[in-house]
Amino acid sequence: MKAYLENINRAFESRARLGIMSVLMVEEKVDFSTLKETLQLTDGNLASHLRALEEAEYLGVEKQFVGRKPNTTYHATKAGRKAFTDHLDALEQLILSNRQSD
Image (cartoon, rainbow, N blue to C red; front, side, top):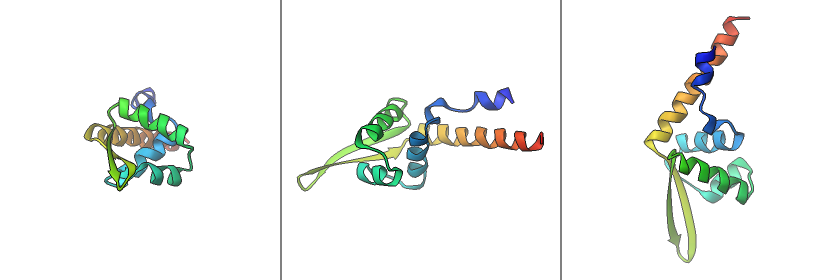
C-alpha cells in the first residue's frame, strides 16, 4: 500500500488542480473563462492553481489578444500529461488494492 501512496502526486491533491488537469487531458487547449466556468472557481482561486501547475511545468500558457481583449489559453505539457496519468494510475492501484482487501 505504501508504494501506491508514494506515486500519488501532491500537485494534483486539490479538487481544482485535479479538475484543471482533467479538462486539459480532454481538450487540446482551454481558455481561462472556460476553465473558470467549468470548474466554478473564482478568478483568484483559478489563477493560483494554474500558476502552481505552470511552475511545476505541467501546463503551458499562451497569451494573445482577440481583437482588443486579452485571451489566455492553457494546455497540458508532455510532462504534465505523464505526471497526471501516473497519478491516476496510482489512485487506481490504491482503489483496487483496497477493494481486494475487503
